Image (cartoon, rainbow, N blue to C red; front, side, top):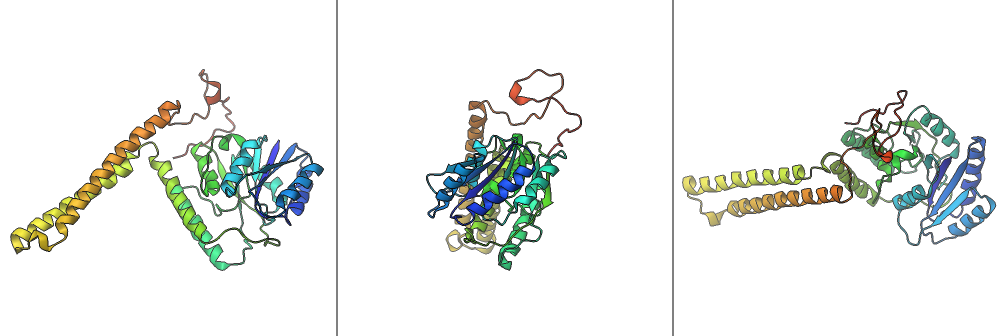
Length: 332
């Protein structure tokens, strides 16, 4: 089954058109499908439109959130209630084109686990928005090693198994391909169409850039240091210790060779401050190590992910028959 999901917020005029286009395209695939539309607590008549659509089409499932939760939370709700082996999220503002869905699925069937849409000819009005998005995409690709042109495109296709255990917060829905690669998934991208918005207005402002940057920092930390946080906190603490020692030596040098009193320079205070900061960071690193071990051991979690085994009896949920035609690539 194919599950198509779209988060919606104040898209009353777009819902009927979106439903009509999705039904038309998905019926042509001649495969079972469902459409999951998540209403993120809209304050217009979006839910009324969804109610009518669900009455007319049994393939449509509607999730109505009780409070405004954001696109990532709405998408996670849709993924949770999706029953398809292939999950295709998209925006509900008609800027993504449903006719691209068959192409994404066809690419997925070539052996990939994630096919990410690439808005090669993006139709957003502001040059500033497109320019900032380009810089963000290059930065994300550089930091994560996953080379995609357009992380912000909501139109993607996933195999269910690569995202069933993914938990997202903040604005992290754009980073699902990164999570998938951590689990050994094969990721690629495909150019898709992008249309200018006709009805409604964009819900994104410049403040979203800062949220994305902070989420990216968290992603990078979880990728490299989630199981060894002492390397981050302890490393920073050691640097502070070294700087404090250097500053202290400079203060002593000025006192004994230039007659500069300790109370005439801020260097002693800076040295002590750096030593305290270093101590606090080492202690936080040790505390973080204890928390991480509690996280894994209390829930019987492993710090590795088994893809498949051969002639090894293990728990059913940890293994799947080895398919030599499609062995997942290892991820650094």
